[in-house]
Length: 202
Ligand SMILES: N[C@@H](CCC(=O)N[C@@H](CS)C(=O)NCC(=O)O)C(=O)O
Image (tube, rainbow, N blue to C red; front, side, top):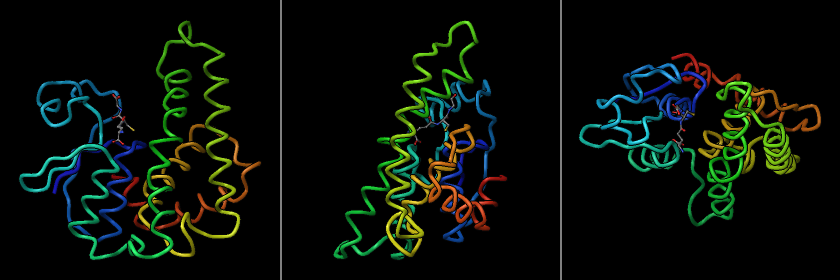
């Protein structure tokens, strides 16, 4: 397998599950914003020139959530997913999709407005609105973690690769976790996993 990867990106989600499942893979490493991500050779693999992309034999796949679901279905042997007839399954799906559906849209705006745009094109009102919304999405995760160590219960699931990673990225972007103590603990729990550390340092 080959993973198109950049540090501090959603590609870490895929490296993380590959590490947790103990799968072998090669890495093509980009830096975010690198010009070759938008050149024809890579655009043939990912039409938006983004990461992650995974190649597995003849299969080529982009979208971090789809890649994770593919890896679970093909190589997971039931690991990291609650059984579909268990009461946890619905909650698992919800928190798996919450990352791209709710957390990442305001985070994307914040990245654009505080990092990518030149200062004269940044808009304070957009920053305020995106920060408020991002915080709201995170309060909901904080609340959910009031009585458990992981999003769905006492055991880690693949929802951590998505929403757990999005929570970690929020903190790295400067979102204050003092008013979200369950998230602060959760982040430590995830960041100390060997598989997460290896995935983050490709
Ligand atoms: N929904 C996509 C988002 C992919 C995406 O936007 N990746 C970002 C990194 S986190 C990227 O490649 N940005 C580089 C760029 O826009 O040039 C996924 O989950 O895979």
